[in-house]
Length: 177
Image 1 (spheres, rainbow, N blue to C red):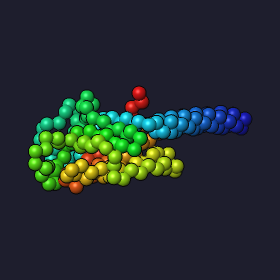
Image 2: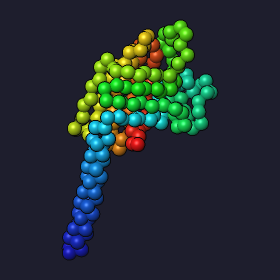
Image 3: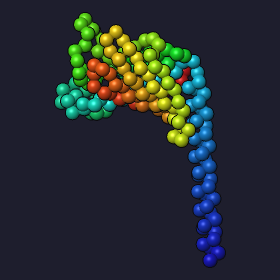
């Protein structure tokens, strides 16, 4: 009987100590996330692209090493998503299908934008401990709706909808300089 009480006591101490350590790590990660996202410039680098029409892309045979149709490696490719106070600077490579032909004379095939968004919303989801951004960006011929989520680990999800192209998502992280 005494042995059972000792085991229960030891097990309880281990569980309590592990959970308090995890909570401490989450608190530190949340504080770091809040500090980084309050900075004037936020830099995000995508590491993976996730196009909607993965089957078609996989059949083309043009994917980079270590990629599948639905999970394309962007490691080593130039890309960025920068929030600079109230402006946005974006260049993300695009893998997918154009719904409508690009404007005549367009040589840019990626998703690119520099300037102030038409709509810029930022919220902090306390229940899930993450920041959620929403942008509407308009170029001369294209409109982008972008949802950006930043997690406490500074990992990000970017979801891009366009009036001319099919949906694409990106996974990456905030880079701290």
